[in-house]
Image (cartoon, rainbow, N blue to C red; front, side, top):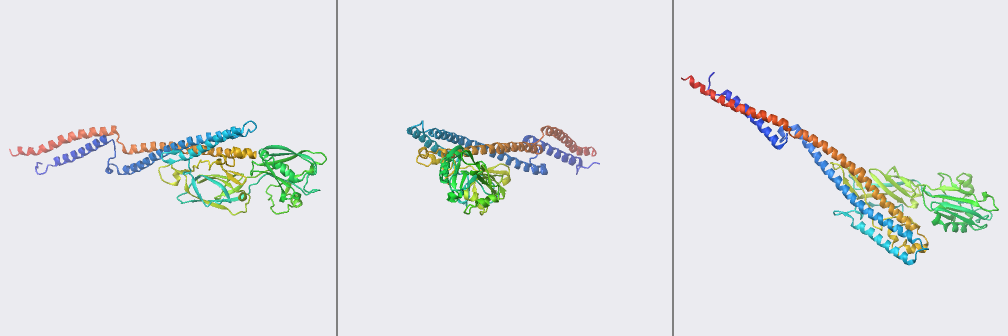
Length: 518
């Protein structure tokens, strides 16, 4: 066949050359960009998967940076707290030194007080100035804010962490189910004659702070025994009082603190002329309620085994439900620790000893330091922690004589200054406040350290592993394989050269018709 109007071989050669040129362009593009997918048509499904992976990778990169920055922030906070710790230890050593009044002059104690004042002011200054960038760390701006707190039920409340779960506030309900108790031993004063000791005796009185021995003369009013015991309260941790304020009703020895760590032990270790059973002490049997009504019905309580003979009694910790969860009790203190809520509460004595009281409630309305740990902004991938103020007026909250006292009370002219402690002959209150302040600071350091080590660092390592795996997956989908692409490029180059030559031959075929025209 010899046709010249339509050169079919040329058309076929052109189409194949066009395909080869397209293939050549594709390979050159992939080799120049290093990507297998440069536009949607290259691999629609692969592009969709790759973009999703890239979104995850970007989120992971931001999360890794968040964890690293949070770690830097907490390290800065911890270094400031270490300075506060050193200052508190310094103050404690100065108080212990000042308590040695027999060997220190008033001038030396005044010098110690000046150092204490300076250290307390430095603690407050660190609280006000410690910062990370423009973020204040220890001035209370990263603490939680509370509202509706009933002072008659809760003395102090410190929130460690709280999850609001997209709510504006978090309600906290505290329901006391078992009362806190002191250790208590009861002595029957309805003897003959009533309200006096029947013989001389020597008593060993022991409590959480130590042991002391008292010698009581025969015929002494019980009020004198109460006075003698209370004069040694700072040494024993035991205080005494008349039952119903009447000597004939008897007397009670009580630990000055509540909780299982508090106890009272009273033993008769000597006394002539009277059998031992003339000094019988009783305690309330386990789970037996202590009556508040008067008079104190000795015979009824003993016959019903509500009162049982004893030489020692231990206190009991408060037992309470916080938002339906059983909290850990220690004396008047409650503690709960869960991912959604962690807090420490000091209950008032009245509320902690009345299980029948109406549950008290308050609200956590905001605050705290929130850390974004994951690539998605959701409560499940966030963690919060509270960093309270380290100002001296907030540290060392201790319930003393029915009043909460702080580290600032150790300054000159305040209730627990060296001069006032010497005047009262009582340095125990000062050391109690300092011990509580040191416990708060070291506890916060430990909590932040645990958060940095067990949350932030493990989270960063986990995110880094995810980042590496997702990056590898995205690379497998999207990046060009240069070995494969160069081999395909070589093939396309050869086909392009062959196609060009073939097209030339196809175009020359039409000229053969001229030979027929002779």
